[in-house]
Amino acid sequence: MRVEKIHNAAQTLGRNWQASNGRTDLAAYVPDVVVRRATGGQDEWFAEFRNVTVMFAKLENIDFSDHRLVEFLQQIAAAIQEAVRHFGGALPFALMDDKGLNFVVAFGISTATYEDDAARTLATGLEIQRVLRNLGLGPSIGVATGILYCGECGATKRRQF
Image 1 (cartoon, rainbow, N blue to C red):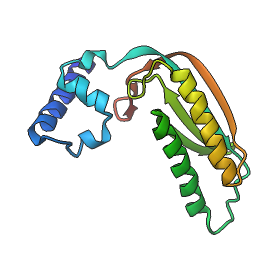
Image 2: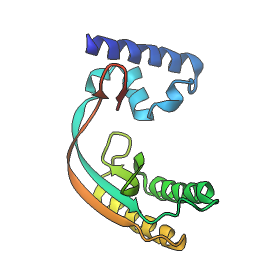
Image 3: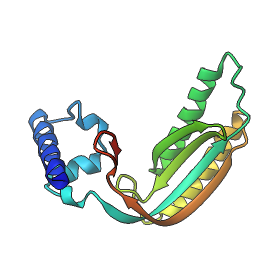
Image 4: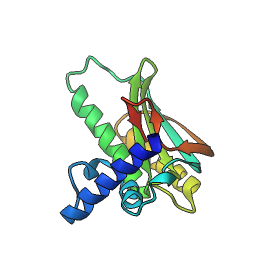
């Protein structure tokens, strides 16, 4: 049943994509590699184990009482996004909790795969460290490489890829 639902959604996405000769409202929110696989009839291959390099960039001691906080957070996010984009990575998560603001950068997932994923991740980390230090922040950065499940996760009402 689940595979049939994925297949139907992929066919609908593919028809909408092909009919518009460009991005549809739905396709704009789906990674290009997923759209290409769906329109090519490869929806059964969405779930896979991949060799992935992940970087965690953590920021602490952010002053939440500062009236310019929103603009500062936007500066931080834009700087990190630009560094990740420059090296071809993906930024699947930005999380804020009691431990601080955390950004997760990934190389090796289906939307960001290169032969030198680990080197790109380290270069991205050095660039993030540089730009955040220019903003007066000292990030904690960690990198890990290993086999990771890349595919559909979650329940029927709330899933992510």
